[in-house]
Amino acid sequence: GNSVTQMEGPVTLSEEAFLTINCTYTATGYPSLFWYVQYPGEGLQLLLKATKADDKGSNKGFEATYRKETTSFHLEKGSVQVSDSAVYFCALSRNNNDMRFGAGTRLTVKP
Amino acid sequence: GAGVSQSPSNKVTEKGKDVELRCDPISGHTALYWYRQSLGQGLEFLIYFQGNSAPDKSGLPSDRFSAERTGGSVSTLTIQRTQQEDSAVYLCASSSPPARGYTFGSGTRLTVV
Image 1 (cartoon, rainbow over the protein chains, first blue to last red):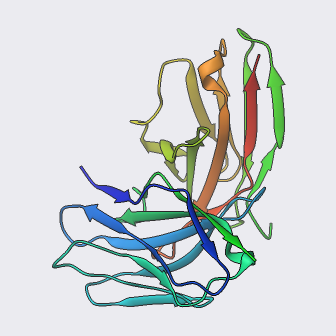
Image 2: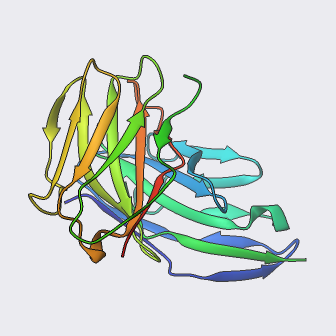
Image 3: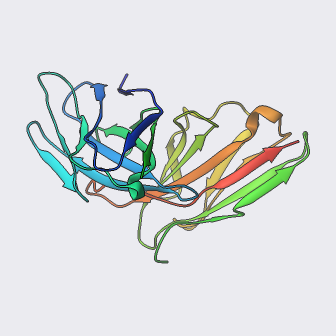
């Protein structure tokens, strides 16, 4: 079945450090890929998405590139801030009705 | 409404009692989803509605769980004879095609004591 696997956390970084959160997927066909973010005490918010191979999704300084050859959609940010502390979820969907999420990666950014 | 609204935000119930969780999706969103988020774990898919029908109920963990949606809008998730392992945050999301991602509510934190 369709699934995503993302790196286990927690991840702790200092402010302005480089962030990578790995995500790989298993799916038939050509799914859309997403990153969601959950800030403390809040619901999930869509961070970015990519709908086809080689697409790059970007938002708030975060980027992820849809790599079909490696079935990956790693999340990156060049310089993290304390306000980026949250739980990040990788997800995939084939037809918008079957979104499947990874286990989530908790990021803590220290000043 | 402007966003997905869930109520109550917190619910503490005694083991064996029934609970109802409510989700009010974004106006006009035809699809509605329920997920469960247990402590330290990812999101577990429960059920999906398209309009008032539920083409995918595969995620409901047991027959104690049921959900309905009326008028293509509000949905209720009912858990009968609650157990301690039902304690989790129950998240609702809605979407409207074409695929743009889901909009989530803030969730209902259920604690069974």
